[in-house]
Structures are given as structure tokens and as C-alpha cells.
Image 1: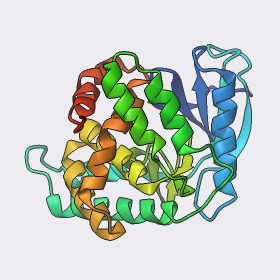
Image 2: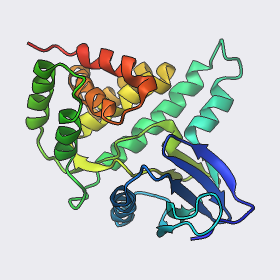
Image 3: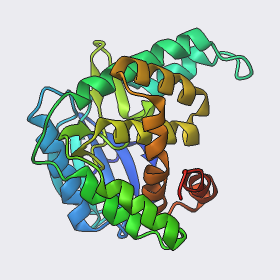
Length: 266
């Protein structure tokens, strides 16, 4: 795969850079990203493409040829003209940073919740199991007290494989509002088949971490629309926080550890 000189950087993370390059979006990974993870993300997306969920289609998985990223693994997806829900919300809901438009923010949160529930109503049995992924991640976090980690593992072990599509990173920045008004979802690296309540706990945690003003509104709307008790969401927050710790993001460790320790463990 070759990148053109006219490419535009869209996002930069610890282990990847995302470019728009003509009619495609190219996610380029650094050498810390195993090839197996790259292909797994592409496979996840391909499996979601087989459902009614609107996604940016996988076009190519290969190494970059030439330039600063020569030899790096990359995934090319189709480019969807539009903006993320986060970008739109930041523009419309925050004309004054000290006084956000809460009514507008509520509208965007409702859009997000309705879309997430629609996704969770889809079955994709070939996806990796949420339970297996959580068990592996929680077990790997040795910074957590062994007794607490054991209790977290017991919670994971109690999970039933409902088989619902659980995005695993369902936040406003991963929702694209296309120019024609259609809603697309991107970044399927963490998708699993599992329990929607755990997926909602993941979204709630990430909103508290990155977009705290969204978090409580999201919790209120999701639990009402999905007919789920808030206590069930809170029950899984320590587990998903422990799983997030496994990603090794130093800047988030204090917050995530506090969420783990907030669990009601005996």
C-alpha cells in the first residue's frame, strides 16, 4: 500500500496515525502493533460488514511502501464524507465552553444511545467472545491487588454469552454523521459478541474519562431506553476499568484504578 503526498492526518494515537488519502482512510500502525492485531481488526470489520450495521468498508490490509512509514502495517477503509458526532457536538453544544447547551447535548446523547442499542440488537456469532477477552485482559493487570483481581475474574466468569454485537469503544468520536445524514460507526478493533450491559458500562466509563459532561446523561438515557437498572451498569464498571488498565495508558491509570477500587468487593 502506498500513501500519497496529499494525505491529510486525521488523528494520532500512541500506536497509530490515521490519514485521509483520497477516497480512503488509512490507519497506519507503529512497530509495537502485532500483525495479528491488525488482521484481527480487519476481520472484525469484515464480519460487521455482513450485518445491517453501516460501517466504513475494509479495502486493503498490507504494509506501507516507501516514506516514513515504510514497512508498517496499515488498514485502508472507505472514506465516509461527514463529521464525527463529537465534532458536531463540540461545535453546536459548546458555543461557550463555560456554559454548554445541555439541550443540544441531550439530543446528541440520545442519537448515540439509540444507535448503540440498535447495534446491540444485532447478532454476529463469529466475533470473539466478550467474556474471553475480558478474562484475558483483567488477568494481565498485576497492578491490581490479587484479591480484588480474583473478585473481578469471578464477575467475568459469571458472564453469559448473549451474542450481541458489543462495539467495545462506542464513543462520539467513533460515530460518523455522513453528509447525507446516515450514521456510520468506525473503529471495530475491540468489538466482541457479548452482553450489552457490559458494553454500556464500557461506554459510560470512557465518557467519564474523556467526556464527563456526557456520562450521566448517557447513563440516564441508556438505562431508560434499554430498560436496564443503573446498578447493573455500575456493577461492571470496575471490570471494564481493569480491562482498560491492561492497555497500559499511563495518563489514565489513576482514574481507572479509582474505578476498580470503587467496586463493592467482599
